[in-house]
Length: 272
Length: 279
Image (cartoon, rainbow over all chains, first blue to last red; front, side, top):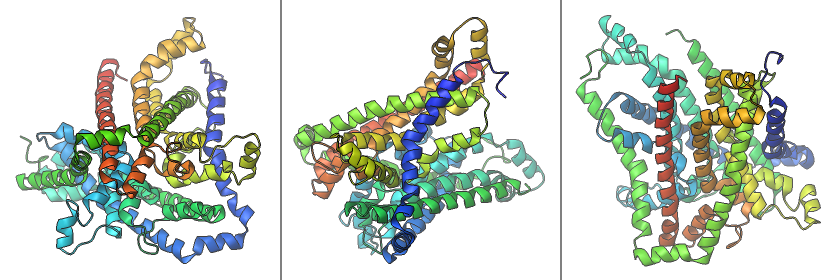
């Protein structure tokens, strides 16, 4: 298979890749996978299904879902604006999209907790209006919207830029109005990448820790996210319990990625 | 202006731009402004004191050291992996590529956890290392390992598509002209991929400096010893030293802004290279 290739260095580069990948990623991960074997099925099951853990899965899942949904809509609008409309300051806005990627999560967390605290810039008017953000799932969702936003925009931008204007022109000359063109012509073409962006934002949100814990208040059964349960169990040196919850979260996010990948391949096949 | 077929009505444009600008103001500009205002609230002296306090300096030192170890290691790995993947054909290539992306799909807390499970003082391996006086978890090596894990894919995933697009003709030509293995790499490949490599390293660097969840698990939070800058910010914040916390955070915000500026600049270099070479 490699006879035709005359370039050197396959053995060295491949060997290094495999050894480094195993040492840094695969062997540590395998340690997590074999944990249930050591702790016994009963104990494992108990840790996975403890009411507090189950509540935390739901908090993590529902907030990550909502945030990814909001990001899909806002991200689509923002990338449409950035690709299609020339307006002053567009380049600055475009560069700032990456700010959540570049900003350490702990700083984001501290900022959001302060902004939305009852005496904060945004928290005060909201509190006056009877809306509490800190220590609620709304707060968690807001933090996750911040963290997930670049995923959708950076996925959508190249796709929107590559859309052929001929498609819209023919739709127009066939009598479609702008909304019909968007719904029937443009949207089906961009749906697969929108789903990709959604999936990336969701999967990031599910495991997010730093930006969430400050604003969440971490009340058990209410605003305690799954990664925090892992952290709490580790603080008590309950390695088995921590691994059980971690494995659940891991399996969960892989299943979600799989489902959304299937959904995406279905959207690809959908006739345009 | 745009034609009727491809342009949106004015009210649509205005509404969508307003939504976008509003979102940016609320979610991106406001946190930025807050950090500066809160950090400087009590004057430049308090701001300066927050930075010159020994705990802050030691946190900065640890963060810089971790980053200085992690970025070159992951960059070297990224180049090796991209070379193997893009210059050769072998079975299981798609599988290998998806393995490289694995750390991005895993919660940072879990990334920290796996190292505690493997090397913590209560595990067989950790105990064995302990007999030699080697401590990894709750100590600097653990922080380096956890950071290596979470920043693992950055360089590789930038280089693979780039080197795929460049093909291997240039390297093959160099080989026919008598160049040796490393000569080909230094003289032909590296100049071709330098911007992509730098791009990956910039992203890797930003994440290495800012990593919180994974490092928090393995650090043990020993002040002045195993605290990185993000962990130091958390401690200050939870002690209600809000001004100090934001003063320290402002440096990380500045670094984040430099990162996105570098990123935008490198992207413009790519476009230029694309136009010049057609690759």
